[in-house]
Image 1 (cartoon, rainbow, N blue to C red):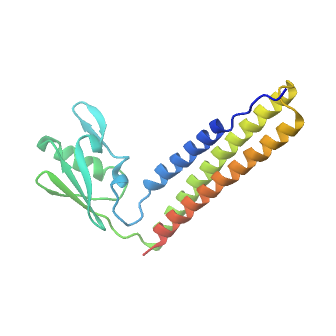
Image 2: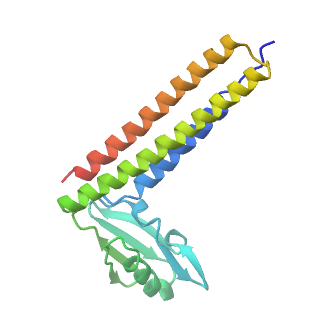
Image 3: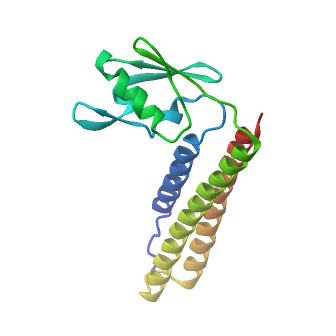
Length: 186
């Protein structure tokens, strides 16, 4: 009588929410140089908009400095313009085919704004995890209604879904706490 309920799909979907959160948090500027800081930058190159990492190599030169090695000499100007226009508050210094970008320290107000953005991302991830939980519970209710599983199985699987949900919400909280610590570090 008992049909199998597969929780691995729910775990995979919840893991996707965590991965998205980590990607979004990685793009937040913290005053420390990271190559992922320039991920959102797109360059108008060769008649199309390309991500910066497809026209240049981005590396961390120092704790507060990024180095962008442009592969094509003709692209130095467009890369410089794209970085300046990216709303990241960065202004590169051009040295031949290399752009050096000093990452300014964040003031207290900007740190708090970044922390709020991080909280927003974390809340979105929690909502995504909860949506996956709701989908799982709905599936269980449908299986119960169709008499594919019994009430005991439904309750057991629901408890399992809740346990997994709590685990992933905990991961969201951990990622947020780590990012917040990084943002507030002077």
